[in-house]
Amino acid sequence: MHEITRAVHLCTDMQNIFAPGGIWETPWMTKVLPTIEAVAARYAERTIFTRFIPPLHPEDRPGRWRHYFKRWEQATRQNLHGSELELVPALARYVPPARVVDKPAYSAFTRSGLYDLLVGKGVDTVVLTGAETDICVLSTALSAVDLGFLVVIVEDALCSSSDEGHDALMTMYRMRMHEQIDLLKASELFELWPRE
Image (cartoon, rainbow, N blue to C red):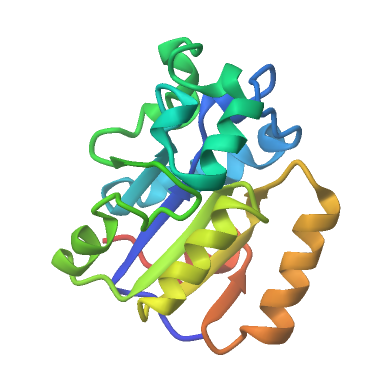
């Protein structure tokens, strides 16, 4: 792997709703939070946090999303407290200079304006951290690949509510997508991506 230069740290959905006690609790979020915080602190001006924003009502989403949010109606905005969609406090303190991009779906590139933001900054590499490995991080990684970005996944800065799903994705990235996706530990990232 060569030196990382025109990159952005894209941290996916580290929100209170996924934190311990949240509706969609991701049990080992607290385990990876210090590593994600270290990445965000080092590259605060190059960090973008995404937030998954559910609809106000299930009927506000099309097709199977409507069915999904009828099942998870307690996670619609009509039933949530505002703070549940906010970033966890340990990361929120980096905004600004870090930015926040809201998204209505799994991929950070879906109806969010993220692609135009990255192109406008001259970004060619997306460094991914966050939750969940096998849902939103996966969807975002595949979208980034489709859009032509090099994707760097910080493997010790991801969490999932499924150990099996996490492990399967790590295997897939290594075996199937090694030309478009690089897996690094945070310590390796810090060596390859100098501070600006």
